[in-house]
Image (spheres, helix red, strand yellow):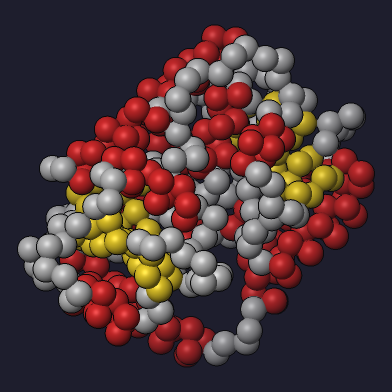
Length: 361
């Protein structure tokens, strides 16, 4: 049996479905940060370390423990896991880039960082320094126990090792957070949408302020700027909505409510351009969907850009894009090459095969 520790989120159902597809009824799911109490019979609430210890000791046939994700609160739990059990970390992003001090350069651009500092609870420099030292102490004391690190973005594994978050003993494995962002078939040829997707969530690491300022200097015509803001910080979402309306007027179209996944994909299909102003990996599923749609994707130089270039994908770095070339579409051959590259690396078949290998080494 596999023990999973999953932070309850929009990905939870897809995660469980993915694991059950590969190895049915071979999993027990410990769910953190519950939003409600309506859990399937194979899901158990895990609120704290005591709950984890009880669950871990409840049976003797565990093959390993899989964390989705490995949140900092759970790092000390690793010491409780017997050495013969495998420890696998499915990366979501925030639990590394958002907490590990050496990776802070992957978070904010100048204006967004100013907003974050202004709207954060006052913390003295001493308290902040002590907090950073504690995180680094916990990471170096416990994260050596991670055997395998799973992510779509293999460059993140490299970044984490260079920063000291992961040790050299940790092996990289390809995998997705659930089955929603893998592909079973190549898309049919359709006319590209004309609108622009900006970011993927109401989180400051999207650096919306800088992106909106940049777009405000362009002639957008009939194009809309579609801005997914359905999850994240309410305070940040409200600021982005107000700022976007002020700078872009009716062109700015925030999406603040959750949508069924098929409806969300249909919305993305209206976008011929995706502008991700993040530095750390974020919204990768959105990016892959847009590439399969044939959209032009503009990102910052970082792990996502480097990984997708390794795949052979045609995409552009924001710093290299001028206001004159921003709207230039991909050529038909570039679109086809992107679809082939994404399908090769993130097909449903590959996700299932890789997960099968992880669970049955």
